[in-house]
Length: 477
Figure 1 (cartoon, helix red, strand yellow):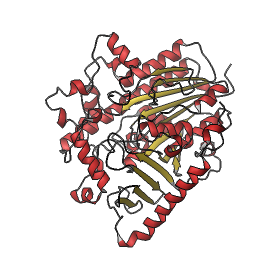
Figure 2 (cartoon, rainbow, N blue to C red):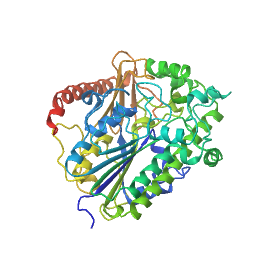
Figure 3 (cartoon, rainbow, N blue to C red):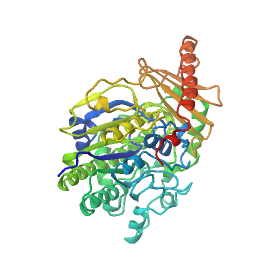
Figure 4 (cartoon, rainbow, N blue to C red):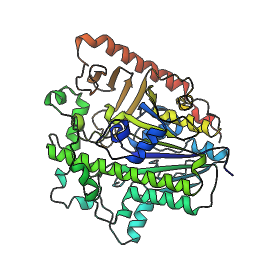
């Protein structure tokens, strides 16, 4: 007999842009399973991350706190609490398969079982951690692909992180994570209510599909945002410095190029999109397994990603900036028969707002002092008030090296980016300039709007620091 409390399956990919799902208006994509979730589910189309890098964003999702209150402001910052503890304490069996990206990687975070698979290519802050994927590759007698062997490729520095996967397909990290989740669902004695978090390592670089997976995208006309010298010159110095830095290092096996060729850009984009299609196929298999094992009828499936990827748009590599290609996330809630499907909600929200919604779905009280605002009313088709502003933050990190801290505030129509130690910044009129090309930071006609948004950041930072301080003490121990 199905449990009254729903099973909740929370799927997070890593570094997946909004424009990677066919049903959201991007016909060059091959994503039939994500399309099904969109067509039968509830999709938030104006959802933004609270941080433009992995661990800070994930810590915000799983604590309901902005980075300055969670304490996780860069990758590698210690992270030891999550609302998964509250689900577990209420009777949910909580399982993680794949990436969580907490520090240390072995931290339980409230899960009863963890089967961690972390970044494909990890060097720093404990990233030599041996995960389940490492063990599987070693047991099969192979060496895991990564920058140590990619550096031997004669065109390594020209590839922008795009490499062909040459090991058996089942050992690819995204296939491995999905297969491990399916194996768990088939072999672990059925247990409800279940909270299953599945973290795909892709499409985060290295962009590494088998060539046959990439070929269909190499044959397509893929949209590439033009990058002009005028745009680059108008960017704030911390971002120009980050471009230079990323051309000097090979973070995640990506050596950036200041002026990549169209061929280089297209190959990188094609390999990245092929990784998305591979994940899409595996999501379909996970849904099939949920159904065959009797979980699906009483399940809610939630899909999103932790941030996007510049893919050379705006002249940048990977994340760490606040362009919409980085901050705007697909967020889909799929539960046919429970929530009316086929709805797209354009209200402004933060990705961490899914946390209290998950707790409410599970019948668990949302803790006091949470900065997240539940999306459940919108999911249920009830009255819901969108955020007036969303905020995001990023501290100095291994690749964001040219400023100590940056902050973004975004409304429906305006975006401002502030650096704590620079006179430079960014101001965009999103209505007139949705691609965020024309930086109005120094425009005489826009100084009043700039000051208005700077005041919004100041007020938010003061209020949130005070209102949510001591949040840990309000959680059950």
